[in-house]
Amino acid sequence: MTTTLTKSPVDTPPEPKKRGRGPKSARAGGHMHAGPVAYIILALFTIGSLFPLVWTAIAASRDNQRLAQNPPPFWFGSNLFNNLDLAWNDANLGEAFINTTFVAGVSAATIVFLSTIAGFAFAKLKFKGRGAAMLIVVGTMMVPPQLSVIPLYMMVAKLDWSDQLQAVILPSLVSAFGVFFMRQYLLQALPDEIIEAARMDGASSWRVVWHVVFPAARPAMAVLGMLMFVQTWNDFLWPFLVLTQHGSPTVQVAVAGLGRGYTPDQSLIMAGALLGTLPLLLVFAIFGKQIVGGIMQGAVKG
Image 1 (cartoon, rainbow, N blue to C red):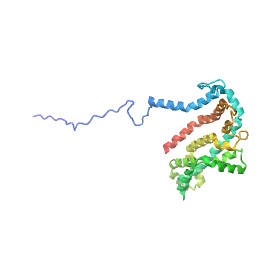
Image 2 (image 1 turned 60 degrees about the vertical axis):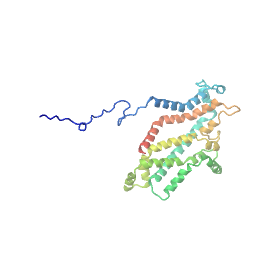
Image 3 (image 1 turned 90 degrees about the vertical axis):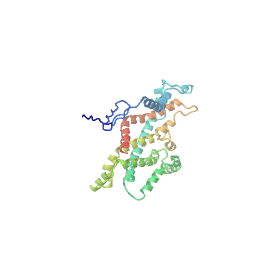
Image 4 (image 1 turned 45 degrees about the vertical axis):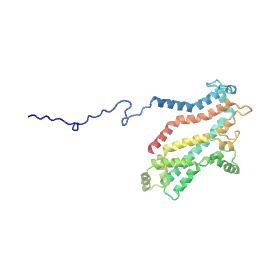
């Protein structure tokens, strides 16, 4: 008698599922590819971001009469270089560029230096009142800067600093945002073990700052320096109050004096605004890769 053995469905091992290799399959370690909708959205955002700059260049290449017509021009004219030359000489932009570069450079360097030290203290040093002091620093960010204009102006007048660059530099030497920014970065980017190892080797607090904190904070320092340089370069209200166009103006004060008259010359104003923007575009074109790399490195560490 012959007995036939059959395998039950339970005993049969399931066939391995085939892994999808199509574009819709999610594979570990694979690259994400953007679809056409993403490219359309990115293109719209890019056009919207570039439009003010392009329109400024178009307006600077026309004359005031053409800009007053309806519809306005949407392409470049032939007066661009003539208007740029008039704006450069009319507003004395050469001296204004030197003044603004000096003010923005000193302010950015000082803010980065002091903010890194203060951020390290708030992030890694333990002392009484650290939380309350940090709360006060963050609280100052909530105060509108316009409220400090009157006491600052009274101080500048008492020191006889009117129409002098130190009147613009002094209020911008510290930044609550810079302290908060560096503290948040150093909390994650600087391990406590490295500081403890440096102290065990006999390093003083200043040596720890110079040889441990500054190298670790270099990406964030570059980002903060770029942000503070741009902010100081674009600052208008306070320099406009304490500086004059014929004294030691910054770029924004010099451009504000362009095109004055019964009928403001909009093309000349746009030419000055375009000249005031070009240095920032040049700086970002040179250092943009390092700045974005610093932001991404900080994001990965955080």
